[in-house]
Length: 331
Image (cartoon, rainbow, N blue to C red; front, side, top):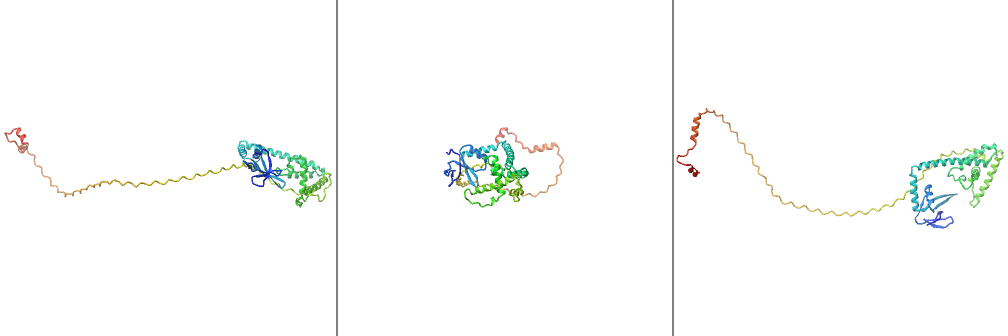
């Protein structure tokens, strides 16, 4: 496991890096490259232990390509940053930090402009010209992220102001941007040194209070109105690093479907006895209606004595001389 923090560049093969002294190293096993763009995450990674910061030189600037660090530390830092940004007071702290940075930037522009005026030290008759030149140089050199000498912290502010004035005059009062300079080591620096001497000679003329020359390049450059600077877009919020997508789980093979069991043929039903159908009897034919005989005339009631005599005549009488026993035998 590496124990030293390094600044490296791309290696000749994938998975390799090249150190500052030209040595080729293999990326340690279990390390991952965190892409650039999230300053909070990068600070956490570097504070957690040794890292390899991979850079690439583009022109005169070095561009970060990311930070190599153990994968476990990268994931822990991502979780920590997400938790920090999800806190309720994070937006309030972020807004307070932006306000503080804006105040510091305004103060730095003022201080830088004062240092430029101190370096120019023009004669009082050219005071307005000195103020205009100081403002032009400050607007060009002080924006955050401009990459100019005014943003470096390696030299004091007064030296930054002097270098920024000479650089502005090199681009605005000379044909430096259109010069064809040989690609020989030290040639460009030599050309810059000669142009700087010419710029200092122009400034000395104004310091002594002399009238500017008719073809003074500084007067012509200041007479041109600067382009209107576009309103800077708001700083985008840092995008959290994407979470690693887990590998999809293998889908189990479907179980074979069992063949359906054969359906048994229905058993034949037992023969049912024949149903006897009752014979329907034909309805009797209606008899023709018989004529109703006329009612008979009712005879006059006979006397009671005559009726009793008649009933007595109908009842058979036993012959006399037989007993009850004889009657029983006979039956």
